[in-house]
Every structure is written in C-alpha cells, then in structure tokens.
Image 1 (cartoon, rainbow, N blue to C red):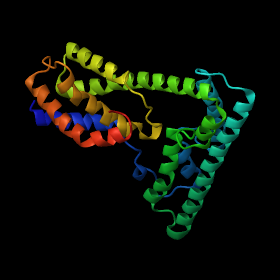
Image 2: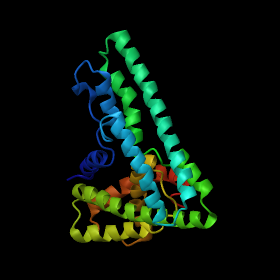
Image 3: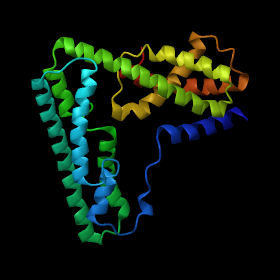
Image 4: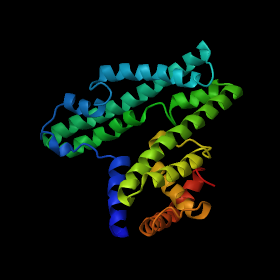
Length: 266
C-alpha cells in the first residue's frame, strides 16, 4: 500500500476510534415530545430525570471513594464536598430546564418539526453527563482543593497522576493497535512502540481534564511517535512505515506549541 493510502486509512480509522460518531437525530421521527427530548439528554444516565438524579448522587459518593484511595476524608470534608456536588447537580438541571423551555418554544413556533434543532439543544447536556459533572471547573472540584489539607492535596495529586499515567499507557496501546492496522506493524514492532509509549507515559506530570482528553490524547500520541526519530533507534521500521512517521512528525510540529502551553510536554 502506498504511504498516502496508509495515512488516509489511518486517519479514517483513528477518527472513528478516538472521536466516535454522534447519534443521528434525523433518524428520529419528525415529531417528538418532551419525554423523548429528555431521553436524548439522559440516555446514558437512566433515561429520565429521576433516575439521572439518583445516579448523579451515587457518583458524588464514588468521588469520595476515588479520593480515599489516596487519602482519608473526615466527615466534615465529605459534607462540604457533598454539598458542592449537589450544587453542581442543581446547576446542571437549571440548564436542562432552560433547554426544555426552548424546546417547548420550538414546538409552539414550528410544530416541533425541526428535529435537528431540538437535538442541538439536548446534545451539549448529554455531553456534560458523559464527561462528568464533577471534573475540572465544577464546584466539587473547587471545594476539594479548599477543604483538603496540603498533605492531602499532595497525596491526591500524586495518585491522580499515577492513575492517569496508567490510563495513558492503556489508551496508547489502543492507538498503536489502530495504527498497526494501517502500517502493517509486526508483533515485534508493536512491542517496541509500546515500550516507547510506556516510557513517555511515565514522564507525564500533569493530568489532562476529562473533557479535553479525546483531542489532546491523539495529539500527544502523535507527538510521542514523532519524537522516536530523535530519541531512539527506529531501524526496526521499514521504508514505508518511516514515511508515515515523517508525515506524523509534520503534524506534531504544528501542534507542539499547544501541548507545551498545556504543560503536557517540555
């Protein structure tokens, strides 16, 4: 296969794996009611508001479990975090109610025939739930930094970075498996690339916010691949594979300043 063909195949496969494909609202009926609109928002969190609220309350308690894998929390700290989490839930459902009002206005103005416009109201809220309400920028995250002692914060951050490194190693294997199909990598080549990724993952000193990970993970992996040319012996790759690496290196040079700004590479 020609290098260009491999690059095209690699990009197509990679986009599908890392980005995913959103549901097509045009497949729905031309007219939908409020319950169906809600189901678009809550589809992965219970399908309706009551079950979604219940699941979100459980997620608050799960946040305590994650934190206490690193450092114990007092009951007063948990109470403060629980209250902050409830605030995040309230703010989310305020946005849900705003979207519902706009949806009902659509129903009145055009008999609700514009399903795409209705889906555009629901989609950002669905994405919020998928990414999680209690991550970067949330009340719970802010209060976590406020109520924890300096020692607890250090222990918690160290644990988060350690977990993130492990996650990036696993995602790097998926990335390489995807790339391996377009580059026709042998098992030996896969192992050598995986060793390079494992080494890079252990150098990570900053956690990428969850809502930014799909985009930055891909950029980071491309940069790791491109850096092999300067850091390691890559004679185990054939000529066509090297040409693909060169093309990835060109992309990496363009995105490197952004990764440096985020503190993901030096």
